[in-house]
Length: 428
Image (tube, rainbow, N blue to C red; front, top):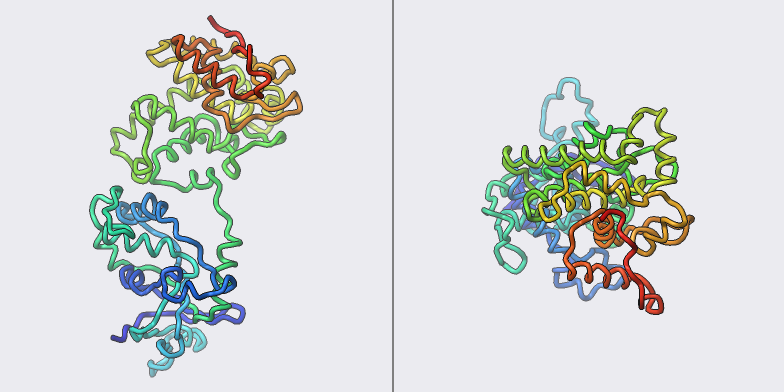
């Protein structure tokens, strides 16, 4: 059955293409994933260009987003149409109107018209195969194995009749491979911080932006990267604030947020509870931790040099150490240790944060690698948090202390482990 759709004809380089919209279900039904086609196995390496579909990402993130979010939206899906000349017909608006449109040049009306699907066409995705699969999963509520998707409460039948933007090009195997390669190879994946900036469904991201704007100062929070260089004037990174906020919420609720919890905003009363908790912790630490207070004493350009100096001279100028300190603070004020907020800050201020040869021996293989010319260890955050908590007076059973010692010794070569003990506490 022939199906006409409104379309605009365009050209880029030597490629003619069409911009149109299709109903979501029609698109998902018509698109064939090349790897799932009969001819895929017979193709040469050069002819194979599609990547494997990451079904876990489709089921865990994209499909639930489409099914559960009324404000769902995404960009155009690029498809190649096989047998283009045989199965498609484009009729320009200028061919069917007897009168010119007021103010419209004829060249523009030549670009707009109807593109007719004959019913026998085959569409291959050049960019967007995961979104196509997600549409199918969201509409049915079932995955590639026909199993229910637990993060989709109800199949989203209304999505089937919603409009998806499509960029359609004639199928030529060599050109299809080139388009796929260039679209995907040169696409730059957003940083964690950039995702946090744009995510309005994740309550942790929203609260992260609030802390950055209201308490730290927007210009002092780096979001373009997850690390700080020696000359960065920032206090911390947005991804660090995000990780800390997640730890705070986990501490007050007693359970870690699941991916589904961050794909849809919680009820207002729960959001208020989260907001109050993260703001109270950050307000306490930004004032109670000496290095934090010094770094933010002057938030203007005149204070930038001081922040760079703190980063050069103190571990607490480093985002990883900042995150570990926040996690430790939560443990110190927890009923199991039961320090007051001020006592927790006072104890943390007593630790050897200054980057000196003597101090770095305390953090060696845990929070720091190498001597004074070394660098922060970014992969040992849990053990670093355990060690900081131990130094700062966390109450530990003999069994817990033995476990900490074992983990600490495991960071050193076999020849150094025997007789290696934990450094002394800085707070009794």
